[in-house]
Image (cartoon, rainbow, N blue to C red; front, top):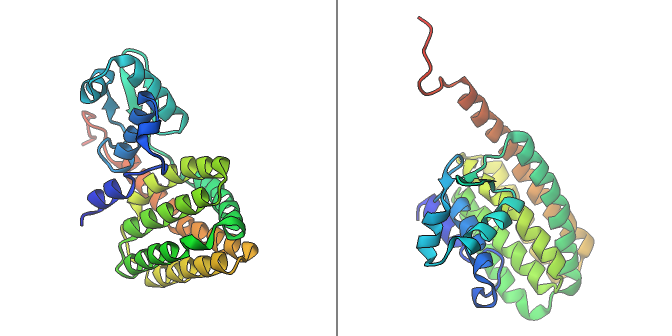
Length: 249
C-alpha cells in the first residue's frame, strides 16, 4: 500500500462519528480535511467553491460554511471570490502543534486509563500490535495514522466529548505533517513500539500516570524528528530559485 493511499484510508473516519448525524456543511468540512491530510489537496492548492459544490451536488452556501469550519481548524485560508488556499505549517507551527498534542494526548490517555471499559481491551491490543508491526517495517506514516486512530478511539471510549474533540483537532494537524517522516531511524522505531505497548499495558492496568507518561513520550519522540525535517524542507524551498526569476550569471 502506498503512503498516500494508506493515509487516505486511515483518516476515512476522522472524528469517529456517523456522517448521517451531521449537517451537510459538517460532512463536507470533514471530507475536505480528509482530502488535505491524504494529499488530494497539497499545500498551496486553491480549492474552489463551485468545484466542491458540484462534487456534492449542492449550492455554494454549505460549501462556504464548510470552508469556515476547515479554516478554524488551521488547514486553509479562505479568500472571498477566490476560494480556499491550503496552508503549509512552518517548523515553528509544527512544534507548537506537537507541544499542544503532547499535553492533550497525555491527558486523554490518563482519562482513558481511568474510564475505558474493559470490553474494549481486545480491540485496543489488536490496534496496538498493528501499529507496532508497521513501526518495525518502517512505515512511519502508516503507524502514526494507526496510533492517531487508536488515540481517538480511546478518547471516545472514555466518554469525554470535549477531550475527544480537542484531541481530534490538534491530532489532525499533527498527522498532516507526518508526510515528512520518510526516513529510517531503527532505535526510534523500536522505542516507539515499546511506548505503544507500554501505553496499552498502562490503560489495561488502570495506571493513569503511566499512561500519560507514555503518551507524552510518544509525541515527544515524533517531535524530535519531525520538526527538524520540516525545517530542512523549508530551508530547501527558500534556497530554490523562484519560478520565473532571473538567475545571476
